[in-house]
Length: 316
Image (cartoon, rainbow, N blue to C red; front, side):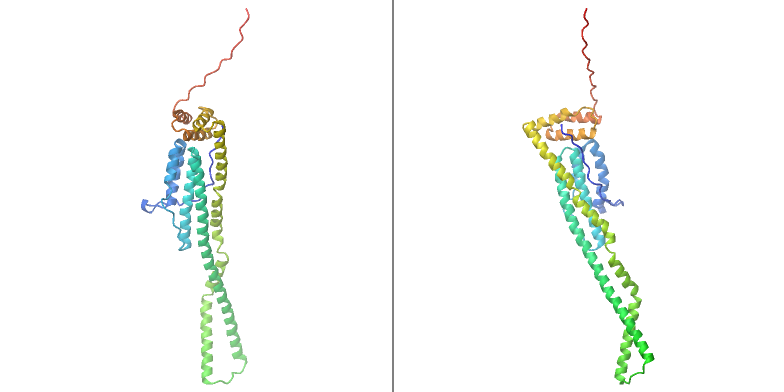
Protein backbone atom coordinates (compact mmCIF):
# COMPACT_ATOMS: atom_id res chain seq x y z
CA UNK A 1 0.00 0.00 0.00
CA UNK A 2 1.22 3.49 -0.80
CA UNK A 3 1.73 5.46 2.39
CA UNK A 4 -0.35 8.64 2.42
CA UNK A 5 0.50 11.45 4.77
CA UNK A 6 -1.84 14.30 5.60
CA UNK A 7 -0.12 17.55 4.71
CA UNK A 8 -0.47 20.97 6.26
CA UNK A 9 0.09 24.24 4.51
CA UNK A 10 1.96 27.17 5.90
CA UNK A 11 0.73 28.79 9.07
CA UNK A 12 -2.28 31.08 8.43
CA UNK A 13 -1.91 34.79 8.38
CA UNK A 14 -2.97 36.68 11.55
CA UNK A 15 -6.73 37.19 11.66
CA UNK A 16 -8.80 39.71 13.58
CA UNK A 17 -9.76 38.48 17.02
CA UNK A 18 -11.91 41.40 18.22
CA UNK A 19 -15.47 40.40 19.14
CA UNK A 20 -18.20 41.56 16.79
CA UNK A 21 -21.94 41.33 16.54
CA UNK A 22 -23.21 38.76 14.02
CA UNK A 23 -24.43 41.52 11.70
CA UNK A 24 -21.03 43.20 11.62
CA UNK A 25 -18.92 40.05 11.69
CA UNK A 26 -16.17 40.04 9.09
CA UNK A 27 -15.09 37.00 7.12
CA UNK A 28 -11.76 37.05 8.96
CA UNK A 29 -13.51 36.88 12.33
CA UNK A 30 -15.83 34.11 11.15
CA UNK A 31 -12.94 32.03 9.81
CA UNK A 32 -10.98 32.52 13.04
CA UNK A 33 -13.85 31.04 15.08
CA UNK A 34 -14.89 28.30 12.67
CA UNK A 35 -11.33 27.03 12.13
CA UNK A 36 -11.15 25.81 15.73
CA UNK A 37 -14.48 24.00 15.36
CA UNK A 38 -13.51 22.42 12.04
CA UNK A 39 -10.08 21.34 13.27
CA UNK A 40 -11.70 19.60 16.22
CA UNK A 41 -14.32 17.97 14.00
CA UNK A 42 -11.68 16.77 11.55
CA UNK A 43 -10.30 14.33 14.13
CA UNK A 44 -13.60 12.44 14.41
CA UNK A 45 -15.40 13.27 11.19
CA UNK A 46 -13.11 14.62 8.44
CA UNK A 47 -15.85 14.36 5.80
CA UNK A 48 -18.13 16.57 7.91
CA UNK A 49 -15.24 18.97 8.54
CA UNK A 50 -14.56 19.06 4.80
CA UNK A 51 -18.16 20.05 4.07
CA UNK A 52 -18.13 22.75 6.77
CA UNK A 53 -14.90 24.17 5.37
CA UNK A 54 -16.37 24.40 1.87
CA UNK A 55 -19.46 26.12 3.26
CA UNK A 56 -17.27 28.99 4.53
CA UNK A 57 -16.44 30.19 1.02
CA UNK A 58 -18.17 33.50 0.20
CA UNK A 59 -21.02 33.23 -2.30
CA UNK A 60 -19.74 36.28 -4.22
CA UNK A 61 -16.31 37.58 -5.08
CA UNK A 62 -14.91 39.75 -2.30
CA UNK A 63 -14.53 43.46 -3.10
CA UNK A 64 -11.23 45.29 -2.68
CA UNK A 65 -11.59 48.84 -1.33
CA UNK A 66 -8.71 51.08 -2.46
CA UNK A 67 -10.18 54.28 -1.01
CA UNK A 68 -7.37 54.58 1.53
CA UNK A 69 -4.52 52.60 2.98
CA UNK A 70 -6.77 51.64 5.93
CA UNK A 71 -9.52 50.26 3.68
CA UNK A 72 -6.90 48.46 1.60
CA UNK A 73 -5.51 46.71 4.68
CA UNK A 74 -9.05 45.77 5.74
CA UNK A 75 -9.62 44.25 2.30
CA UNK A 76 -6.32 42.37 2.54
CA UNK A 77 -7.47 40.82 5.85
CA UNK A 78 -10.71 39.64 4.23
CA UNK A 79 -8.94 38.20 1.19
CA UNK A 80 -6.40 36.50 3.42
CA UNK A 81 -9.30 34.92 5.31
CA UNK A 82 -10.54 33.46 2.04
CA UNK A 83 -7.07 32.02 1.40
CA UNK A 84 -7.24 30.48 4.87
CA UNK A 85 -10.54 28.86 3.86
CA UNK A 86 -8.91 27.27 0.81
CA UNK A 87 -6.12 25.98 3.06
CA UNK A 88 -8.75 24.60 5.44
CA UNK A 89 -10.58 22.92 2.55
CA UNK A 90 -7.28 21.39 1.46
CA UNK A 91 -6.37 20.03 4.89
CA UNK A 92 -9.82 18.60 5.58
CA UNK A 93 -10.13 17.32 2.01
CA UNK A 94 -6.93 15.30 2.34
CA UNK A 95 -8.07 13.91 5.70
CA UNK A 96 -11.44 12.97 4.16
CA UNK A 97 -9.83 11.22 1.19
CA UNK A 98 -11.10 13.78 -1.33
CA UNK A 99 -7.69 14.39 -2.88
CA UNK A 100 -8.97 15.79 -6.18
CA UNK A 101 -11.08 18.50 -4.54
CA UNK A 102 -8.29 19.26 -2.10
CA UNK A 103 -5.90 19.89 -4.98
CA UNK A 104 -8.51 22.04 -6.74
CA UNK A 105 -8.85 24.13 -3.58
CA UNK A 106 -5.12 24.77 -3.69
CA UNK A 107 -5.32 25.80 -7.33
CA UNK A 108 -8.18 28.22 -6.64
CA UNK A 109 -6.35 29.55 -3.58
CA UNK A 110 -3.26 30.24 -5.65
CA UNK A 111 -5.28 32.23 -8.20
CA UNK A 112 -6.93 34.29 -5.45
CA UNK A 113 -3.52 34.93 -3.86
CA UNK A 114 -2.14 36.21 -7.17
CA UNK A 115 -5.10 38.53 -7.65
CA UNK A 116 -4.78 39.74 -4.05
CA UNK A 117 -1.15 40.66 -4.66
CA UNK A 118 -2.09 42.67 -7.77
CA UNK A 119 -4.91 44.50 -5.98
CA UNK A 120 -2.82 45.24 -2.89
CA UNK A 121 0.27 46.34 -4.79
CA UNK A 122 -1.86 48.74 -6.82
CA UNK A 123 -3.07 50.34 -3.58
CA UNK A 124 0.43 50.42 -2.10
CA UNK A 125 1.89 51.94 -5.27
CA UNK A 126 -0.78 54.67 -5.30
CA UNK A 127 -0.08 55.42 -1.65
CA UNK A 128 3.67 55.52 -2.27
CA UNK A 129 3.24 57.79 -5.30
CA UNK A 130 1.14 60.23 -3.25
CA UNK A 131 3.81 60.50 -0.58
CA UNK A 132 6.65 60.73 -3.09
CA UNK A 133 4.80 63.58 -4.82
CA UNK A 134 4.30 65.34 -1.48
CA UNK A 135 7.99 64.88 -0.68
CA UNK A 136 9.13 66.29 -3.98
CA UNK A 137 6.79 69.28 -3.64
CA UNK A 138 8.04 69.91 -0.10
CA UNK A 139 11.66 69.77 -1.29
CA UNK A 140 10.92 72.50 -3.87
CA UNK A 141 9.28 74.65 -1.19
CA UNK A 142 12.33 74.28 1.09
CA UNK A 143 14.56 75.30 -1.81
CA UNK A 144 12.35 78.38 -2.23
CA UNK A 145 12.64 79.10 1.50
CA UNK A 146 16.45 79.02 1.33
CA UNK A 147 16.38 81.28 -1.75
CA UNK A 148 14.09 83.79 -0.03
CA UNK A 149 16.25 83.81 3.10
CA UNK A 150 19.28 84.58 0.96
CA UNK A 151 17.48 87.38 -0.90
CA UNK A 152 16.10 88.97 2.27
CA UNK A 153 19.53 88.88 3.87
CA UNK A 154 21.14 90.32 0.75
CA UNK A 155 18.60 93.16 0.67
CA UNK A 156 19.18 93.89 4.34
CA UNK A 157 22.94 94.12 3.85
CA UNK A 158 22.55 96.22 0.73
CA UNK A 159 20.21 98.66 2.43
CA UNK A 160 22.65 99.04 5.33
CA UNK A 161 25.91 99.39 3.39
CA UNK A 162 25.11 101.09 0.10
CA UNK A 163 23.55 104.53 -0.54
CA UNK A 164 19.91 104.40 -1.39
CA UNK A 165 19.42 104.99 -5.10
CA UNK A 166 17.16 107.79 -6.22
CA UNK A 167 13.80 106.50 -7.45
CA UNK A 168 10.34 107.76 -8.18
CA UNK A 169 7.55 107.48 -5.66
CA UNK A 170 5.96 104.77 -7.75
CA UNK A 171 9.17 102.74 -7.86
CA UNK A 172 9.73 103.20 -4.14
CA UNK A 173 6.21 102.02 -3.34
CA UNK A 174 6.65 99.03 -5.66
CA UNK A 175 9.93 98.09 -3.97
CA UNK A 176 8.35 98.38 -0.54
CA UNK A 177 5.47 96.14 -1.68
CA UNK A 178 7.94 93.60 -3.13
CA UNK A 179 9.92 93.49 0.08
CA UNK A 180 6.71 93.13 2.12
CA UNK A 181 5.44 90.24 -0.02
CA UNK A 182 8.82 88.52 0.17
CA UNK A 183 8.86 88.83 3.95
CA UNK A 184 5.32 87.52 4.28
CA UNK A 185 6.09 84.56 2.02
CA UNK A 186 9.24 83.82 3.99
CA UNK A 187 7.37 83.98 7.29
CA UNK A 188 4.72 81.58 5.99
CA UNK A 189 7.31 79.08 4.76
CA UNK A 190 9.26 79.31 8.04
CA UNK A 191 6.08 78.64 10.02
CA UNK A 192 5.47 75.42 8.01
CA UNK A 193 9.10 74.36 7.60
CA UNK A 194 8.72 71.45 10.04
CA UNK A 195 5.79 70.06 8.04
CA UNK A 196 7.73 70.20 4.79
CA UNK A 197 10.70 68.43 6.38
CA UNK A 198 8.39 65.77 7.83
CA UNK A 199 6.86 65.20 4.37
CA UNK A 200 10.31 64.62 2.92
CA UNK A 201 11.27 62.25 5.75
CA UNK A 202 8.03 60.28 5.40
CA UNK A 203 8.38 60.03 1.64
CA UNK A 204 11.86 58.52 1.93
CA UNK A 205 10.82 55.79 4.36
CA UNK A 206 7.18 55.27 3.41
CA UNK A 207 7.76 51.72 2.18
CA UNK A 208 9.12 50.54 5.55
CA UNK A 209 5.70 49.75 7.13
CA UNK A 210 4.61 48.08 3.89
CA UNK A 211 7.62 45.78 3.52
CA UNK A 212 6.22 42.97 5.67
CA UNK A 213 2.74 42.95 4.06
CA UNK A 214 4.35 42.92 0.62
CA UNK A 215 6.58 39.98 1.59
CA UNK A 216 3.59 38.17 3.13
CA UNK A 217 1.59 38.62 -0.07
CA UNK A 218 4.45 37.30 -2.16
CA UNK A 219 4.73 34.24 0.12
CA UNK A 220 1.00 33.55 -0.14
CA UNK A 221 1.17 33.43 -3.94
CA UNK A 222 3.57 30.48 -3.59
CA UNK A 223 1.97 28.89 -0.51
CA UNK A 224 -0.06 26.46 -2.59
CA UNK A 225 2.63 25.52 -5.13
CA UNK A 226 4.12 22.62 -3.18
CA UNK A 227 0.85 20.81 -2.35
CA UNK A 228 -0.41 21.23 -5.94
CA UNK A 229 2.73 19.69 -7.40
CA UNK A 230 2.80 16.88 -4.80
CA UNK A 231 -0.82 15.85 -5.28
CA UNK A 232 -0.65 16.09 -9.06
CA UNK A 233 2.19 13.57 -8.86
CA UNK A 234 0.39 11.37 -6.32
CA UNK A 235 -2.92 11.26 -8.22
CA UNK A 236 -1.12 10.37 -11.42
CA UNK A 237 0.70 7.52 -9.67
CA UNK A 238 -2.51 6.35 -7.99
CA UNK A 239 -4.39 6.29 -11.30
CA UNK A 240 -1.56 4.27 -12.82
CA UNK A 241 -1.62 1.82 -9.92
CA UNK A 242 -5.41 1.33 -10.20
CA UNK A 243 -5.13 0.79 -13.94
CA UNK A 244 -2.28 -1.72 -13.76
CA UNK A 245 -2.63 -3.58 -10.45
CA UNK A 246 -6.44 -3.48 -10.16
CA UNK A 247 -7.46 -3.44 -13.83
CA UNK A 248 -9.16 -0.08 -13.33
CA UNK A 249 -11.42 -1.36 -10.54
CA UNK A 250 -11.59 1.30 -7.83
CA UNK A 251 -13.59 -0.98 -5.52
CA UNK A 252 -10.78 -3.53 -5.52
CA UNK A 253 -8.29 -0.73 -4.96
CA UNK A 254 -10.34 0.35 -1.93
CA UNK A 255 -10.22 -3.21 -0.59
CA UNK A 256 -6.46 -3.17 -1.04
CA UNK A 257 -6.22 -0.02 1.06
CA UNK A 258 -8.47 -1.58 3.71
CA UNK A 259 -6.49 -4.82 3.86
CA UNK A 260 -3.26 -2.89 4.35
CA UNK A 261 -4.50 -1.05 7.45
CA UNK A 262 -4.48 -3.04 10.67
CA UNK A 263 -7.12 -2.41 13.38
CA UNK A 264 -4.34 -0.96 15.54
CA UNK A 265 -1.87 0.72 13.16
CA UNK A 266 1.34 2.28 14.35
CA UNK A 267 0.59 5.52 12.43
CA UNK A 268 -3.08 6.30 13.13
CA UNK A 269 -3.12 9.54 11.12
CA UNK A 270 -1.77 8.00 7.92
CA UNK A 271 -4.03 4.95 8.38
CA UNK A 272 -7.15 7.10 8.74
CA UNK A 273 -6.24 9.13 5.63
CA UNK A 274 -5.84 5.91 3.65
CA UNK A 275 -9.13 4.50 4.96
CA UNK A 276 -11.05 7.66 4.12
CA UNK A 277 -9.57 7.47 0.63
CA UNK A 278 -10.83 3.89 0.46
CA UNK A 279 -14.28 5.08 1.61
CA UNK A 280 -14.23 7.74 -1.10
CA UNK A 281 -13.48 5.07 -3.70
CA UNK A 282 -16.08 2.63 -2.33
CA UNK A 283 -18.63 4.50 -0.17
CA UNK A 284 -20.90 1.44 0.17
CA UNK A 285 -18.28 -0.71 1.91
CA UNK A 286 -19.32 -0.87 5.58
CA UNK A 287 -16.11 -2.70 6.51
CA UNK A 288 -14.10 0.44 5.78
CA UNK A 289 -16.13 2.55 8.21
CA UNK A 290 -15.89 -0.23 10.80
CA UNK A 291 -12.09 -0.17 10.55
CA UNK A 292 -12.14 3.61 10.94
CA UNK A 293 -14.31 3.26 14.06
CA UNK A 294 -11.89 0.64 15.44
CA UNK A 295 -8.95 2.99 15.06
CA UNK A 296 -10.91 5.84 16.66
CA UNK A 297 -11.88 3.56 19.54
CA UNK A 298 -15.60 3.77 18.80
CA UNK A 299 -15.92 0.01 18.49
CA UNK A 300 -13.94 -2.78 20.11
CA UNK A 301 -10.90 -4.02 18.27
CA UNK A 302 -10.85 -7.82 17.95
CA UNK A 303 -8.03 -9.41 19.95
CA UNK A 304 -5.10 -10.76 18.01
CA UNK A 305 -5.15 -14.55 18.05
CA UNK A 306 -1.92 -16.08 19.27
CA UNK A 307 -0.42 -18.55 16.84
CA UNK A 308 0.84 -21.83 18.37
CA UNK A 309 4.06 -23.24 17.00
CA UNK A 310 3.75 -26.81 15.84
CA UNK A 311 6.09 -29.03 17.85
CA UNK A 312 7.68 -32.27 16.64
CA UNK A 313 6.19 -35.53 17.85
CA UNK A 314 8.40 -37.43 20.27
CA UNK A 315 9.53 -40.84 19.20
CA UNK A 316 8.41 -43.73 21.38
